[in-house]
Amino acid sequence: MTNEELANIMYPDVTHDIDYYEKMYPERKLPEGAVVSRYSPSPTGECHMGSLFSSFIDEFVAKTTGGIFFFRVEDTDKKREVPGCMHRQLRDLKQFGIVPMEGVVAATEDNKYTEVGDYGPYVQSERIEIYHTYAKWLVANDYAYPGFETPEELEIMRKNQEARKVRTGYYGAFAKYRDVSNEEKAKLIKEGHPWVLHFKSHGNYNRKIEVNDLVRGKVTFPENDMDQILIKENGIPVYHFAHVIDDHLMHTTFVMRGEEWFPSVPLHVELFKAFGFKMPKYAHTSVIMKVDEKTGNRRKLSKRYDPEARMEYYHEMGVPTSAVHEYLMTLANSNFEAWRDQNPNADIYEYKFDFKKMSLSGSLFDLEKLKNISRKYIASLSAKEVYENTVKYYNEFDKNFCNLIQKYKDYTINVLNIEREQKKPRKDYAYWSDIKNGISYMYDELFTNITYTWDKINNISEIKDILNKYISVYNDTDDKDTWFNKIKELTDSLDGYTSNMKEYKLNPDNYKGNVSDVSTVIRIALTGRDKTPDLYEIMKLLGNNRVKERFNKID
Ligand code: GLU
Image 1 (cartoon, helix red, strand yellow):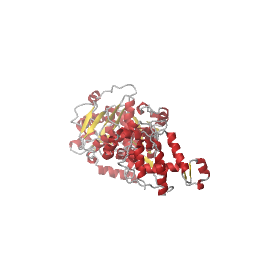
Image 2: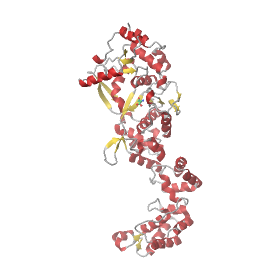
Image 3: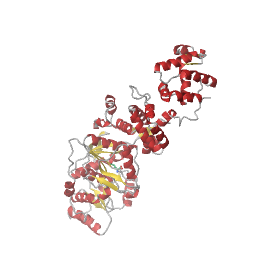
Image 4: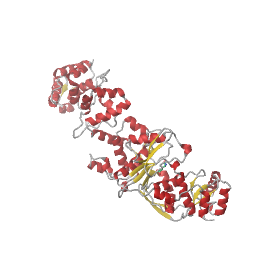
């Protein structure tokens, strides 16, 4: 019996040949160098830092090369499916500005999918007919065969191999059905014995192949010689087979995926070769690690212990999307930071992603670095832009505060402009959620029950004396020099205080305080804090009356 005849017996329902699909999904018409990438999660879990990292890079390289970034649902393990998780993943990606151009673009709570594009279906469970067509081709071309062993038998075989200290797996002499005649196999099928589809490897474990991984560089593997299961007893393909067929038919050129797939690359190489398909470029990322705050050791970033591993963290804390993008790009490409220094105002999408500069640094997550990038980013925005983002954030997380800053819109923009829109702006906000605490004292509605506490100058009559003297000279129309001179003059008029900082530093024990301490008294009385942005600006915005009112509250 020929292989072709066996293939017909195995797949009686397959009506097309592979040419049919090859024509149905022709080469994409894209500019030279365009990258086709995909994010292809299984609907079994939520988006996390690792998936955000690779989907951002996938989207970035597609977008910047005039290519396509598509979303595929890999739902071949129905038992592990979690309702609504693709809906949430798409929502989470969107929150970070990542939107698929093709494939599954929307999902419902009960895992119903909406797709766009000419290379679908983009949901693997709807592609069974396609997989079977290609499986049939493999059988007819001596690259696959049915096996009739049960999972239990395979498990016993594996244990025996371990006991005998030989390589585990279904290969060579262990591949029980590999050399059984086609007649015998056809007979078992006709008798109704359940079967799986095995790959028929032509590889030799003693020969080497070299794989060029974009993250790991050139890596040498032994050739694949495993007759791996490609299609399970229920007719559903395993990842390896679906990956090769889908990424071929969808014309993927760049596959970024987790390191757990790296050892399977030799199998994928052989499968692509068997079909005569062109292979995509691979980038295998590592599990994301972090340096543990307590021990200083590296460990896996954990959803359980590290809030920053969860996507909600970024949303709830209000981490600007652009800052997340900047950070992910510094992890992905070692050239990026230098480029950013030279092009501080350029749109990130102007950056030319360098595949040769991909590294494993993406595996070490550093929240402090992200915060610094974010501080720099927020500092680079205009007061109006900060205001708009702040409104958007608090509209979701604190309606009262949102209403307040909308009520005092122009005032709030001025508050946000203190030490902004200048050469070296203040970098004190890492997250949008920092803003309320950063400016709350500027609103009388929130500046209630403030008590004066400062160890250095804490005698109430002395404090009141400073404030009373000062209010009689303060005027919100003064320029900054006049304002400062008035505080200096006040300082020198007080018993035991000096505005001469040099003199104070030489003989601190001779004095109760200096000009900076007097400013601090004023600052605390007005804001409840001993550190704030520029006090002169703050006072100007508060104005004469509110300054007076706040001073009067101190007792
Ligand atoms: N569904 C696979 C996973 O979630 C995708 C791997 C890939 O990107 O090829 O691991």
